[in-house]
Length: 362
Image 1 (spheres, rainbow, N blue to C red):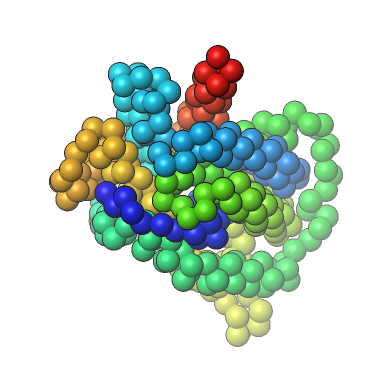
Image 2: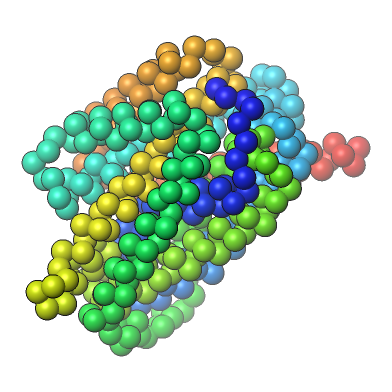
């Protein structure tokens, strides 16, 4: 994998924004509304932001100790070769699981909304091929692609929100906190694990020009993500209501489909589809790149084409044949991914940081 490439802190912030929001905007209103009901917009803002910021702080602190190493490399420095390689492999598995779930979210969404008769295998093969191409081109190309699509991504979402205001009713957001804080806390667990994906900074430190800026840029990205997702949930609740939002798998898509202004503005969900698919391709490309980066650094493989090809076949096999139906994937995302993700995003990094502090004091 490329070692001398450098991207800016601003590019990293843009990359984080698209990486995290691309899978949140479509699905998160459903997950949070099931637990928090009308208070779902609180469940995606306060606690998830706090979790994301804590993850960012820990990752940046670790990065300040090892600015020229990725987490795959400094695991060995902290824990020794044997345990370090084991943890490095575990992080590769974490990224692979995330990638597999993103790919299934993509194929299930397309099957549900636009191409119900298209075999899932072909949808998966198409996005894996695109992600593989992006990973092969490298981190700098992925970062430049994000710069190109970010304006379209935000403007497309903003237009959808503005047009949906015709169906918005603020009464559907009430009552707030009717059942207290506990439902909001429950509803915030899944979003917190997705905000925690800001952890990927731990794999990017050596490639960032002026890595000391990463905490500031990461905070800006996190604030933007929180505002973006909160608006997404508020609009969904205001148009559909908490009960309907909790029952529809892709509620924000339904919001976009409900937009009709005379006979002039209709079918705006097509624009939402374009920006969402673009964001998912960026996320899948970066995950594919990081998985292969981890394999080359932990296992020492040098033949990039072989590594990329093996990874692609593995992703396709797991995503298409080993996961269940869309309902089972949704259960994994809401019940099993959060504790799994939080462990790798925050618990293990805190453990590594604690060892660094103890060694420094010793």
